[in-house]
Every structure is written in structure tokens, then in C-alpha cells.
Image (cartoon, rainbow, N blue to C red; front, top):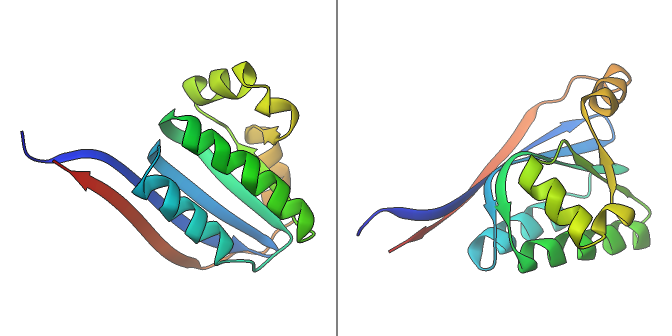
Length: 133
């Protein structure tokens, strides 16, 4: 069977001191995790890194490990990491692994409050990864 087996698309937008990474697809071992890690580590433009995971339908151990790494990394460099509106499956895995106690998870109210104080940003980048059979 030919075609796309797995894909992650990351859209980055800066709004004031907030870098928003909208993730769509799967955050799994391989190219997907590498794409997200590179996107976040290469863009240190503000004080807050926000991962919008509302459209992430699955995450594996490597993806969870990346979230734990990013939580530690942002603390070391003096930034904050927020996970915005994780999908039900992702939220369940964050709770199961107790990562919800390490990560700052927020929902739409958090987003609304943050955006009310952030100037309008400019779309900066779209990155995607695809694994083909």
C-alpha cells in the first residue's frame, strides 16, 4: 500500500512574546518528533512556548519524552511551556504518565486570556513530516 502512513504538520506563529506551535497529526517516534523538537528549539523568540495539541490524535512514548524534555529545557532557558487544549487521547496519556503534573496544560480560557494581551503576530512557518510506505 502506497501513501502517507503518518504525518505531523507544525504551524508556528509569534504573538508578542508567545511562540505558538499548532500541531496537527501524530507526535510519534521518528521524523515527527524530530520536526517538532527542531521547530521549538530553533525558535526562541519569546518567553512562552505554547504547543496547541488540540488536533494531535495520537502520541507515543517518544512524543511524551519530547514533552518532558521541552518542559525541562524551557525552565533552563527561562521560558514557560504551555500545552493548549490537548485532544482527549493525548490528555488521557498525559494523565496516565503523570506528565500532567509537570506540564502546564491550559484550555481555551487560558488561550483567550493570553491572546487578549498579546499583539497580533505574523504567520512565520509551516513544517511537516510524512512517512511513506
